Figure 1 (cartoon, helix red, strand yellow):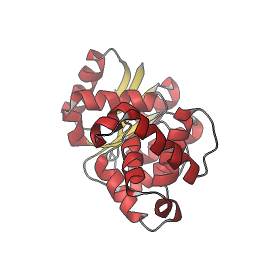
Figure 2 (cartoon, one colour):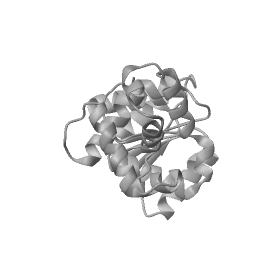
Figure 3 (cartoon, rainbow, N blue to C red):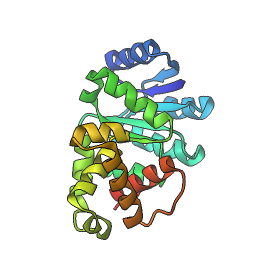
Figure 4 (cartoon, rainbow, N blue to C red):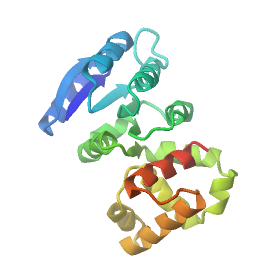
Length: 214
């Protein structure tokens, strides 16, 4: 798997390179600023990009802007965004593009190495890996939306865990229910969100994007 990294903090950038390399991935380029990052993404067309929201020169939202621009030119480019704090607006801007292959994690999650690498792999496969705190804030902002009102509390819990990138087994373990029960909840979620039969992986992504995007 080929990876491009955009992170201005030298220690974190070097740490990400070593970590992903240790897990068998090839970091084709690691850059510390927005212009170089965009060039790297368009040149390498990586299997996944790991990008800090705030990059030089202004340290505001350059990383996010690069991700959006790159995905406009390379539709569906898998992007995992890292942020120091929960910033739902940034997550919403990425989700608004309507593609899967997206992740949004807080930087302190990187310390959970297995979970972080799992998120990278999930995004590279076209799924979503949203930080639980981001999911919580996005859902709370749309608590009165029509799709949300149609879902039961358990269905909302299942969908929130789907947004984190968890498979049925992981959802079942977290909620202490059977995988069969999880499948039933997911099928009801698809029905209530008006997602017609298709490949389950695609419907999972569409359900998450529809729900979080309000």
